Image 1 (cartoon, helix red, strand yellow):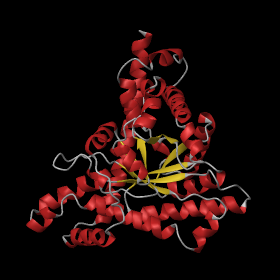
Image 2 (cartoon, helix red, strand yellow):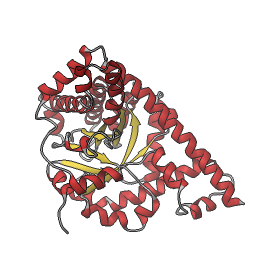
Image 3 (cartoon, one colour):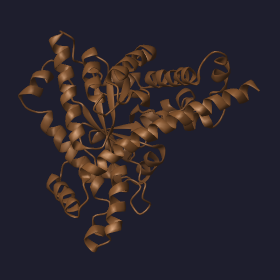
Length: 368
C-alpha cells in the first residue's frame, strides 16, 4: 500500500476520523478497506449525515420495511442509526484495541431536543451507551451550559463522550474543567480511569464564514486582509488552552491513575469559501493529540495534495494578534461564537426534524 498525505498526517500525531456514515460504506467492505488505505482511526455521525444516507438509495429499505407498524419515526431512526454505529464500531475495534483505547471511536449523538437539559442528556446518553453496547462508541453531547454537567456525570459513569458544537474558547475551558471533575469523581468512587475517553469538538470553518461577512461589510484594506484568519487563530488558541489545562499537578495526579487527555477535535473542516484552499482547515491545525473529522470531499482533497507540517502550536502570538486586530475593528469574537452555537443547535434540530419526516414519508412509500 503506497503511503499518501493522510498517512503523514496520522504520523504527525493527528487522528483522522471520517465525518460520514452510511450502511453501504460500513457493511459493504469499503470502510474496512479504507481504514488502512486512508489511515482512518474513527468516524462521526449526526442527524444531517443520516438524513442524506436514508434519503438516497435503497440500502435501508429492508430494515425500514421490517419496522413498519407501531414504531414511531424516532424509534425507526434509532434502530437504523444504532445498527450502523455498532457495525462501524466493530470495524474500528482493532484500532481501539491496538491503541489501548486511545483511538478507534465512532460517535453517536443524543437528540438535539436535550441540548438544554442536563438530566435528559445524561439519561439518553446512558441509554444509547447500553443499546450500542460497544466499548469504542462515543456519545455526542452539545457543548452548552447543560452539556457541561452532563459531561461530568457521564465521565464519572465511565461513558465515552464527544462534546460537540464548541465554538468559543470560554465554553471549551468550561468543558475541560467538567471533564477533569468527572475524572476526579470517578477516581473518588474507586472507578478505573483507563479507557474512559473524550474529545472536544471545536468547530472551525463556520467562524470564518461569519467573521468574513463582517469584514467584507467594513471593506477597508485592513479588514479585507484579515479574511480567513479568525477560524484558524481561534482553534490554535483553543489548542493553547488544551496544553495549559492538561499539564501541572492536577493533571499529573489523574494521569498517574490512567486518565487520558480530552483531545481537541477539529470539526467543520471542509472549506466553505471557494477562494480558500480546499485543505486550509487541515493543513493549519496539524499537531499531536488532536483529531480532525474530515468530510469525504476534504479527505479526498488532502489525500491528493495535502501538505503536512506541525502548525497548530507554532505561532500562538500570531493567533492572538489576529484575533486582537479583528476585535479592534469592532467585531466581537465572543458574539460571533455565541451566535454560531445558537445557529448550530437550530441546524441540528432542523436536520433531525427533516430526517424524521423523511423516514415517515419513506415508510409510506414502502407500505404503498
